[in-house]
Amino acid sequence: MSSGSQSHAARPTDLVALVTFDDEVRENEAITLERLGAAEHSSRPLSVALAQWLHLGRRMWVNVDGREVHGIATARDLANRTAWVIDTLIDAAGPGQGGQVIDDLLSQTVEAAQRAGVSHVLLRTTQESAVRESAMRHGFRPAMPERLWTGPLSQAPATAAVTIRPTAGSDQVALFHLYSRSAPPEARALLAMTRDEWEALRERRWLRGGTELIAEVEGRLVAAISFNRADDSVQFELLAESGAADAIHALLNAMSGETGDQDALSLVPRYAGSVEQVLLDRGFQPGQEYILQSHRLRRPIAVESKVPVGVPVPSGGGA
Image 1 (spheres, helix red, strand yellow):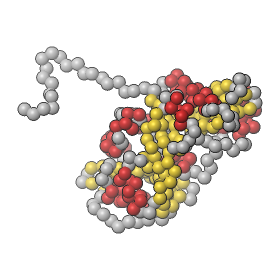
Image 2 (tube, rainbow, N blue to C red; image 1 turned 90 degrees about the vertical axis):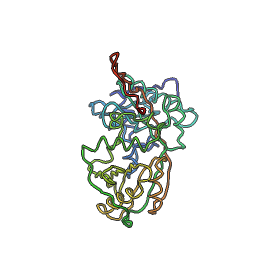
Image 3 (spheres, rainbow, N blue to C red; image 1 turned 45 degrees about the vertical axis):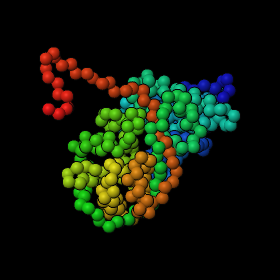
Image 4 (cartoon, rainbow, N blue to C red; image 1 turned 135 degrees about the vertical axis):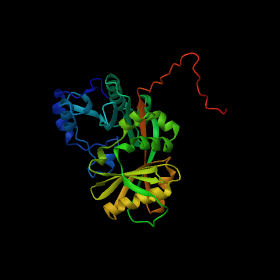
């Protein structure tokens, strides 16, 4: 990175450089769920810059030297403005820069998130991505290792009695508890510890117009699936508690019944052993591994309740 280059939020004065850069094909190190199921993986920096200038919920930082773009980072809101996901991270400076461009862009992103009062900034990369080290230097921590599974959708023999129904708004509390049961404590500490955080961090853009189903056993929610058609395949997301194989099979059967026998893909947390085993049993194959990193900028505050002197407080112990 030359002494004349610097990173800043995209400005109208960067327009000429962005127009030139917009037609170039560059590797985007940031992976989002909608990119997994899309045939077009390139980022359109000029479109993002326009969205930022029009206040459409996109943010962009560029590293430029004169009219030459050395790097680009973009971020957008997740479920609301309290959480961001980095959806573009491009180093165009060439070899020999030692990650300086990415460092500069991530520094700008984190500083902007702090000024905006954001609680989390997420970044997903491949496990072998060169930007992981830079992300760690700027406060990102590995929150959730993931693996991509691909395979054909088909029907499997019916198993134990499982009730499948569409997700309702009243299911959100139960879905949060399902997430809390399925994710290990270290992942929850970096991602979502409260229901508000969990709702803010959910990646839902890929699901627009899709379907959400839940599986209940004896009235208890034990698994859920979200799915949507993505080009010539089906993209889906499974959330299940440990040991819920029958419910996972039932949900996959229900999805197959709606979409037909198509190729499908899903990004699965490595801790979701029940999900991975069912997918393996149904002919899916594991592929590329990813890591979802989180920079937690704010933590929930534990509120202490003051009890007047002389009021008995239940200890939870026996009589």
